[in-house]
Length: 283
Image (cartoon, rainbow, N blue to C red; front, side, top):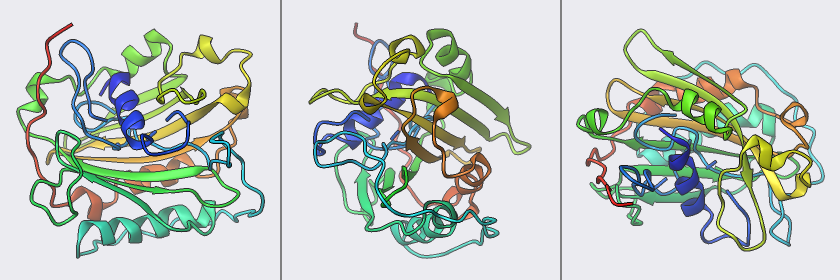
């Protein structure tokens, strides 16, 4: 996936929020040969927003990224994943509780977005349901979310699933990024980058140059672990925090825990739609 995926995903995800920016997954591919409306997915490469996912730190009443007050979560070793059965929304909530709670504390009420390939809201049990975004804003901790979505085999030919790291790093929209091809052919991407939160503007990606010396209350850092599986399922585990620069980003969830979430077998086995993403070739 490209930075455009994340940008769209985050924008769609926060469309109903007070003025905040941001993932967070993306109606993918805006621009020439890009766009898609995989609303609220979370953000790697190819189908659902690799870097997605989608969510900023907890918001205060003004719509500005807030730090929250209490909670000093005690990090514990994440439990071994188990293969869960049942409706995907229930499975995702169970996986999130196991994976995020040891680090973020009590997650609070879930916020759901379930959409078809064009970003239109559908019910979780609808056969057209293709992108599931589960978002939490635990008190006193960063915002975290999970995204699970499907993509069509032909999307692998129409959209590049590899090379998002090189592109994002070259454009300056990512501070860190790695891509790893797993033994089964799945692509695992881990990325960190800044996202905006300005007044009532839509969430958008920022460059590293944009945030140099910028008020840390006006942007956030996103860390996303994404998997685009060999079985055409995309998963994203994301965390969004504040910090004057990437070295000061106050991550609560270890990257290993995000990776375990994105690789959870229950999520990768999700029964989701696999409609192909529409191509947009206009300027």
